Image (cartoon, rainbow, N blue to C red; front, side):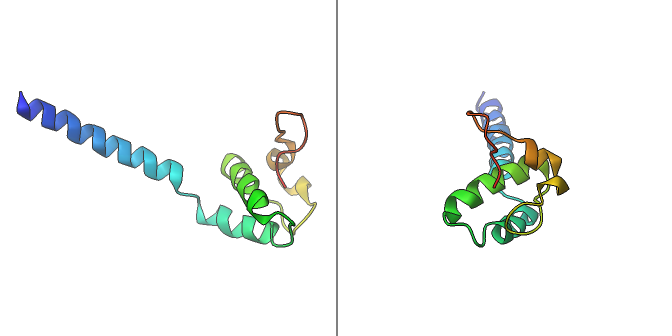
Amino acid sequence: MKLVFATVLLVCLVLGSSMFEATMAAPPFCNSKCKARCSKAGMQDRCLRFCGICCDKCKCVPSGTYGNKHECPCYRDLKNGKGKPKCP
């Protein structure tokens, strides 16, 4: 009985840690691209947060600090709850 419990606990810990790592780790690609994209933003923390969300979903970030959204249609087309563009 103790062996079964220990095995189940170990499996849960391994699966839980792998899911945690996957959700918490931002791809280096997104970090560097969003840092460049948000370099001139007035509210950098907010810009970086939303850029990271958009990059994670779309796997791309437009070049430059503003505009060029035609380079990444997914990034361009994501909308917030009010129907306005989500991505900086």
